[in-house]
Amino acid sequence: MAETTKGSCLCGTITWEANCEMRPVVMCHCGQCRKQTGYCYAATAADNDALTIRGNTLKWYQASPETMPEAKRGFCTECGSALFWKNESESFTSILAGSIDGDSGLEIVEHIFADDLPDWYEIKDGKPIRKQ
Image (cartoon, rainbow, N blue to C red; front, side):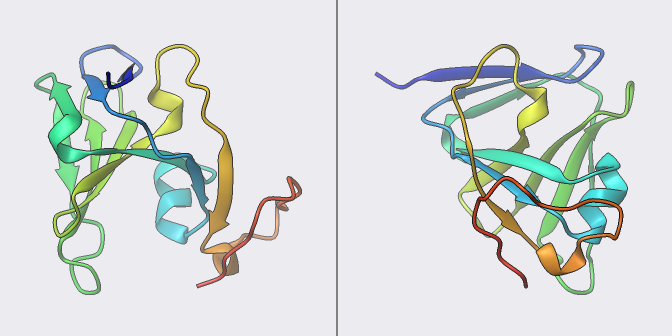
C-alpha cells in the first residue's frame, strides 16, 4: 500500500496529496531558488501520476525560458507560498518540503548548486555537496 503525504500553502487554498513514497529532501542553493524562497529550496518529490493538487490559486511561472523552457515553478497567488518545481520532460514534480502538513520522516540527502552559495551562510550538516 502506498504511503500518503499531504501538504498545503500558507493560506490553505492550495492542497496537495501524494500517494507514493516521497523522495528524500534535496537542498538547492541556486540563485533562482534563493530568490523565490529567501534562502534555499528544500525539496522532496512525488511521481506525477501519484500527485493530486487542488485549489484555484495555483500559478505556474516559467523561470528559465532560455535555458530550461520545460521547467516551471508553482506558487499560490493568494498567500505567495512557493510549492512546486516541475520539468515537463520528467515524470515527477518537486515539492517544497516546508509545505508538508505534519511529520514526514524525510531526511536531507544532498545539497545541489552549491557553487551559487551566497557569502552569508555555510553548509555544515555533513551531507554531500554537489557544485554545478
